[in-house]
Image (cartoon, rainbow, N blue to C red; front, side, top):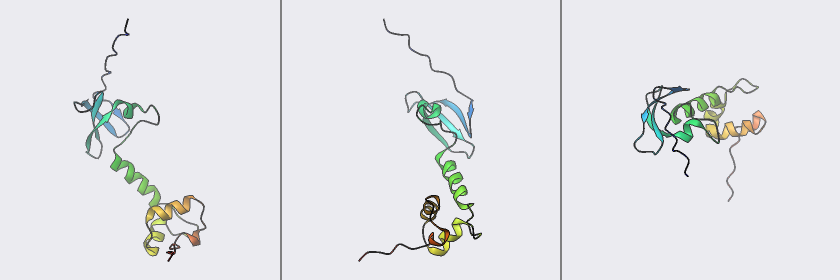
Length: 118
């Protein structure tokens, strides 16, 4: 005998972080239509909301990128400059300077432009 089919849990109106679950999605099986506080509406699967393998989603991708960028911009080096200032002066991407900082590069080497091999 087959186990009884599980009923869909009604999550309509619930909040999870910055998102509000609006209604069941017709496009994704077992999915939901959600709205972020920034106003973006999108479809999310139940597994991405619950987060079986990693924490469940709490905001849209745009808001996550904005928070990550804000964290990168606000990091101060020992000499008082921010990572964004180093990137602007050197012409390197913000992500490259941030990556070098996280990997433990000395502050004076963060702005080194890689030499092209001939």
